[in-house]
Length: 261
Image (cartoon, rainbow, N blue to C red; front, side, top):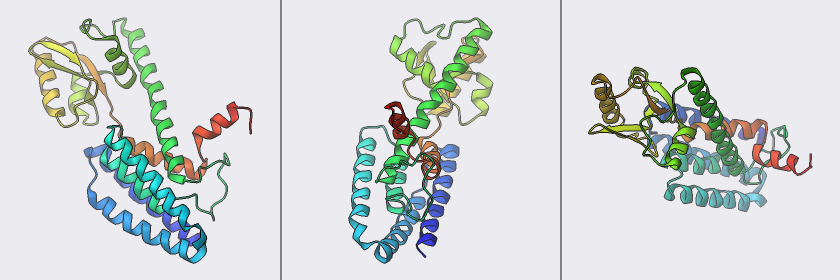
């Protein structure tokens, strides 16, 4: 029975997290009904299992939820997390406050006592690794075309250029128009081009329209800066899968770097 409840909680989380990630990727929003179903279902399953098999560990359940909720809210109000990201992590703490006891040991053998923190650490690392793909793509573009990456943006600050370089790459204007998951990292206003610190998700169609118009008028070259803008929720979901199979990537790497194995 204990193993069945562990499996049910994991499957519940995976189902809703994968659906939420797909919704976030396609629409850049997740309906609140996802969390309205996941939260009480997770709470009921986890509470039942703790009461039946480990009532002495109920304080761990409460503490895991409290720590995860505090972290999620802090990240949300600081602007580092979206609403869906914060809700997902809090729901995760209701479903999997600690690593399922009936599951085999993870590959690394290390998981935080508060399992959602392991998922969060994995998600942050995986999101950071996407930078390498962007940097390599920008290098190959410059090597292939021989052009300057920021031609026409000479007046922009170095820091803004670095930020755009690390999270975006050059795409064809037609490609930007057709692929809705691409978001402009530059804008055109009264013949003046400017780089954007963050993509304007809500105003995408307006920005793309201005870029298209400038392109048709010959004021822009064929390629502009854009980002695939992968939602963090996708990395949280992948981080959950890694946490269940491998464990905590960040701490296991640090542990190895310090000479422990």
